[in-house]
Image 1: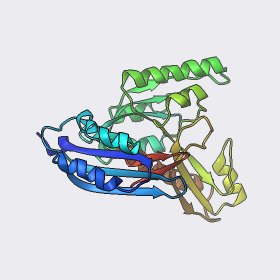
Image 2: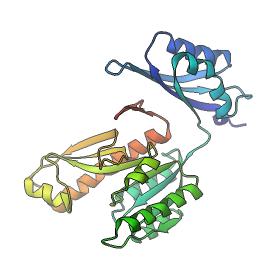
Image 3: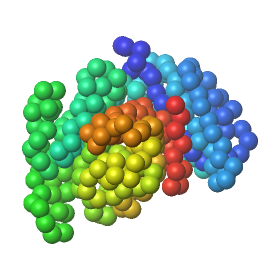
Image 4: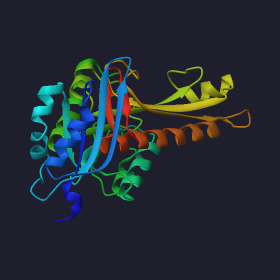
Length: 291
């Protein structure tokens, strides 16, 4: 059996106290596991402790549920929230997009190049523009149109079709790769911790149509992007990753847009990779990211 079959990642959070690292290491040692990498963080502001451990397990421990059972006593003793992920099993991902294809193309390329440990099960869109791109990467494309000016009931019906696709594809993560629709509160609640969005970040902020045009007119000197988990509060979910790039007066709108889109693709790719590698732990309205 391939050695990767026995590789696991344990993530945990609990109230900070003495002996957590020692106890976790002891359980793994007693089970015959070998720790390959371990990271931890204690948040002084909240009193919470977070830990990620990558380890290999002996042949008889070949299932995440078996490994999870090893920590039953520690969960009771420390009040831990623990999750065990088998690295041989890749997260199943659905990518949602509208008309702008730069983030979608970047994710599909990285995935096909073996840079993203995930399984893309499909692309869903309210427009048909990206169908050819999905076909190029041999990924199923689902056109779920939404008429202009659609009412709340029509929008919810369209979301339910996406939910159906997620259920049928056993999807664990929905990536909004410039999907330009506001999701309902009901949909956001169902997606809690399982959906990542990307949006531009300007100083100052420009909302609405043609943000790069607005930024150009104001002569911004910094452009950037933010990737975050989706919540009912528009673009205000727990932040996973951000980046910026300096720009100047020499860039026209097209150049500014291209630079901004480049930042967006990189930020989203890092956020998605960290999620599927189980490096992100929620800390209230923030995240802890073990890189």
